[in-house]
Length: 468
View 1 (spheres, rainbow, N blue to C red):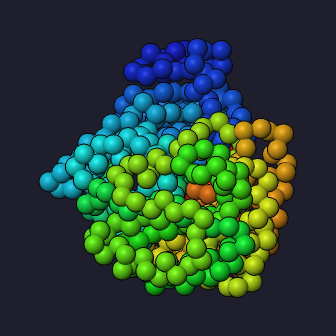
View 2 (cartoon, helix red, strand yellow; view 1 turned 90 degrees about the horizontal axis):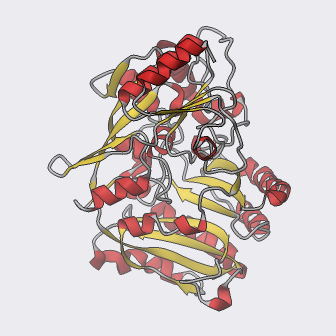
View 3 (cartoon, rainbow, N blue to C red; view 1 turned 180 degrees about the vertical axis):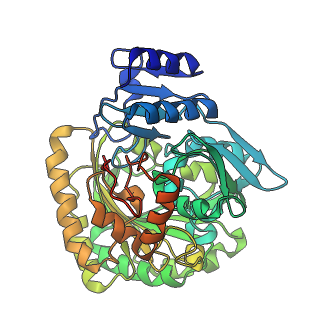
C-alpha cells in the first residue's frame, strides 16, 4: 500500500473521500451490482474531479497497487472492484451537459444512463445505450454499447465523438478522430484497457416518444415465434428494434394475474420511426401466433429505458454466459426452447439482442468491436437474490451455453462476460482486431497498469503483471 506518509499526502490532496476497511461507508462503497462478487479493496478513492483521478493513478503507479476503475459498478464480472488494491471510484463525477444546437451530450465518467436520459430527453435527444437506466455509462460504452436504438442509431461507440482520458502515467489526453486517433479506435469496444475516461462526448439523435413495450407468448409458441422473429429482424426497417427473451412473468402489474410466475417467451419492442408508419412496419409481427399479452404503446424514451429497473435491483446474484450469433437455425431454435423453458429461478432469463441494421453498416475494423457481421448478441443469465441458488443457476447457464455455443460466431460481447473466462476468450471476441489492440495497449499502457478488465496484453513484451 506504500508508506503511511505517502498515503497521508495522497489523502490530503484529494477533494473526494479516501476510504479504507473500517471507514464509514466503506462496505457500501465496495458493493457492486452483482452480489456474487464480494471483494475488499485496501483503498477506495471517491474522486470528485479529474485532478483526483490523476492523483489516484499516480499514487497507484508509485506504490505498485493493483487498480480497478469503477463507474456505475454494473459490470457482470465485477471488474470495477478488486481485492487488496485501489479502486478509483468515479461515481461522484456524474454531470451531464446537453448542447441542443450541436446535438451533443457531454457525460462524466461516473454517470449512469438514467442521468443521461433525464438530461437529454428535455431536448428531445437520445443516444443508444442499454436497457436498464442503472447501467453505468463508462463500462457500457467502452465495451461497445447495445440497446433499444441499436438498429436505428448503431452501437453506443458509433455515437461517441470524443473521450477525455487519464492514462496510466497520469497524463490527461483527448481521444477523437482528430486527436490520438489510434486511442480513439481502441476505446470504442476495447474496454477499460487504455485509460480512465473522465468524460464522453456523444452524438444525440432526435428521439423523444417511442412505440414500445413487451409482447409475450405461451412457451408452446416459442419455436414459431423464434422462427418468425428471425426472419423479420433480418429484413425489418431499422426504425424497429426488438430483443427476444425467455422469462418468468413477474407477479405484479402490468401483467394480468393469470400470467404471474408463468414461464413464457417474449419480444421487447422499440419503434423510433414516424408514428403513422408503425402499423405498416409492424404488419409482419401481427402474423405471429396470437400473443397472450401485448403492451406496445407510446411512451417517453426514458420510460422504456427504466422499465425493467425494478425487476433487477442492485445486489442480486448474477451469472452470465454469452456469444455472438450470425444465424439462428432450426436446430439452434430447438435448443433455445429446450433450455429456455428450464429457467432455474424467477429472474433468470435469456436475451437475443439484434446488432444488425445501423450497427452492421460500420466496417469491422473501423472500431475495436469486431463482430459487425453478427446478427445478435446472446446472453444467458442466472439471477436470484439467494446465494443458495447460485450452483443451480450456474449449472443451467453453462449447460445452455454449451449446447448453443457450436451454433455461435465464436466470441462474445465483453460486457456480458464474467471475470474468469480467460485470454483465449478475449482474443476470440476481438478476432482480427486483437493484434492492433495489443499494439495500442503497448503504446498507452506498456506495463498493463489497467488490467482489472477483460485484459488485452501489451504487444512486444510479457508483462509481469497478470490480469486480475
